Image 1 (tube, rainbow, N blue to C red):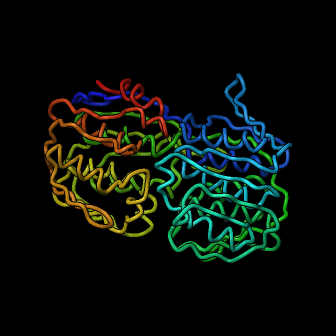
Image 2 (tube, helix red, strand yellow):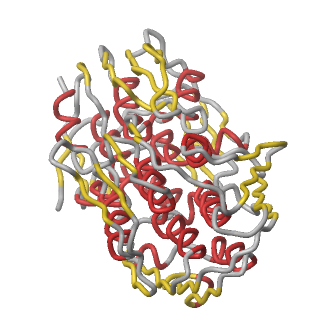
Length: 426
């Protein structure tokens, strides 16, 4: 459905963003591996997380949200055969593939047209090396059928930094004989490692390598999910760019493997501080306080691999902020944006150019030259939740109305995004 976005004067107030999507996926899937029950508070309401819940139900798990809001996972009666539809969720497909490889079962994983275009050979190859029998569609894409069980530990060096592939191999390693080691080219989000340790798994870590020994006990736990820092980013960006803004986003995850966007905005001159820092279920959280800076923003260069990985989901949003910064903002080394739910480099470049931005697409990033006063225009979500939300922020900054062609795609990660945004607009 189309949505018209009006310019905003400022953002003010307090908002608790929904539970972290990445942590929610992992809490659900690891709950299947665990002995005893896994209980989750604050589970993400994202459509993608719903896809994980349904996939686990289709495997035979008990996965239900109780009247008190907590979600319970029990896995007593797993099926020997199952066909799973994971919708648009790449995280579901890859984490469940790791689980399926370890089970004595034959499981087919499929998704929507968008997910069928995304690369899955990167997960099929290491799982096959561990002994899983895997067939895929052409070019290693979905649908993928996994006949699991009988795994052996391997040492696997990730050719591309990917927390999803890392997590899938570690999950499979819980079922394998011997040790499974994953070597990362650069550190990626470490929610899986944090949760495994909280669940009693002896996870070795040395020189960029993570090692798990199969056959150990994995204890179910009570997981408290912090607010999603990627969801918070859209409000942070808008408050940074709109004069007079002041917002607080309490109990938000601030894991340093996920907060590259916040650090980049601070480098540009943003006024962002963390208050009341503490831990929830092993994850660092804080109240994120944002005020519009008294001085203008300055362009930056983002190309260091670890920063790219820690900012990957927010890079289209960074392009929006960069239109308001003095000088050039350059992003390089982010080719992974080409194979997300959309080609995010092409999508954000076309949309911002239509709004009057001086933006140039690179093969692995973009260059934005600012500042530019954006003008309202017709923009496309390209079927991608993060493009839809980034262009909504652009619409708040623009002169005149901005028309987004499809607002329903935000349900993939943040179903209540537009309502929550409305509560902060002044």
